[in-house]
Image (cartoon, rainbow, N blue to C red; front, side, top):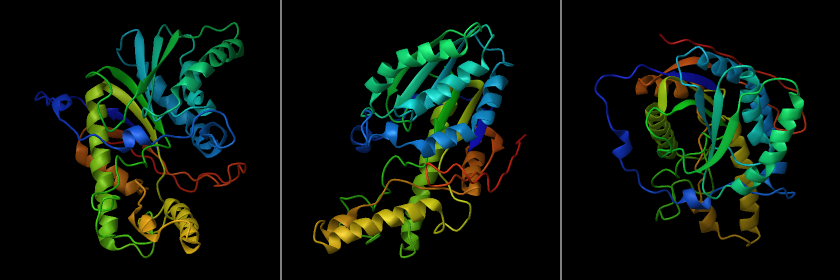
Length: 331
């Protein structure tokens, strides 16, 4: 988890809005399972809920810091990778609660890929509004407005200098695409039998994943820097790893279990082996140092707070607190 604020803009301005980026096939094909069925994201996202609850104090601090700036009477807030279900409104509720009694209006933009179940969000909004009004009965809540914003956060989403706060939780470990050379169109399988980084993954493949993370995250920071007002804030939470060893992380273990499950289907002749060999997940779990290095090299943001915490992988087991913490302030 990291919070950052926009640095003062240099006099020489670059127009990043005009820089083209190739369309990504996963933009229109990838999304969480919608609705409220047994297999929906809405009913299988307790781990993500834990992360949201863990980061409440940091989010409150970032929102409060915004109130000290000389901003207009309307705060524009973007939730990147909002998905759908009850978790979507935890963030919204926390911001509204923090802004109680302040003479401000709040404009929320809930962003996710076009295939996201935005209709489910909109259907839930009326109930959410009634619930939060009843919860704070007798108190003055700021007027708030919610809009859906389909699109990849690896593209421009907002006009220049129009957003005050960006939030993203459990999303930025997803890459914009599978690293070049590992996609299903490749003629040579460089990571045979694996779908992410495992012990048998060659160092050359590890390098491809690391470069994809560095390029994606750098591009993400550049885009958000253009969209944020000067002094704007970002609160980002995503899967990472405790150790610098790229082969040792929770994401490696999780993907390894999934790969073994697919291998069992190959052994039963239910899945072609070449399909497993050609399949690689567009994810990467960075270390703290990797995150800080990209932010520092971008020279666009200062890190206010960065913290590594661990949650129990059992979604119904709330034991297991923080295992490591690191806070920094960059001048």
